[in-house]
Length: 116
Length: 113
Image (cartoon, rainbow over the protein chains, first blue to last red):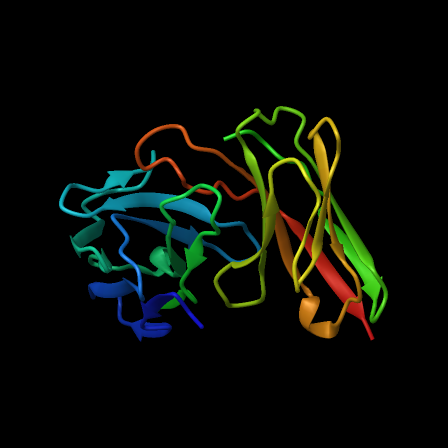
């Protein structure tokens, strides 16, 4: 069964709207979660690392004021796309790593975001 | 993360074995070799991983070269549901919070009925 739950799976909204995406770890605690973005026919690109109880770490070129990340508990991280525009339309995927490098990383099913 | 090189695409006939290669010549001694696959409009799915020895699970087998500079993911009987992009990723620990996976372009596997 799924060990990382991502919600919503699909959202369409108007330009200028803020959209929140939730990522929950099921049956395990995740002090760190990763947020990826994937454009059509491209690979996953890491956007930021979400850390429980502290500020997120953003990859170069990712606007932290645009993509707000909150990791308020050991099982929930949220990504808010603020004042979304059509160029923010993408597939957003979260993942939660295990505590051991010898274990697989778990991914959410992704959120398809379409900004009109 | 050390880099991997995979062919952009491969084709296989249904019910035949598939060998997906991956080169990782700069692998370090502590890097694990992970394979994930991604079906259309889904998040990546774990397939298999290994360090030095060959590995088998219900989904696939992983053959690792003796010098660890390359590996091969083996699907024993390809089905239409195996059509996906397969990513070969090296994963090692390099400090707090450093288990992140860096995705390359992967290999798009097409399965022909």
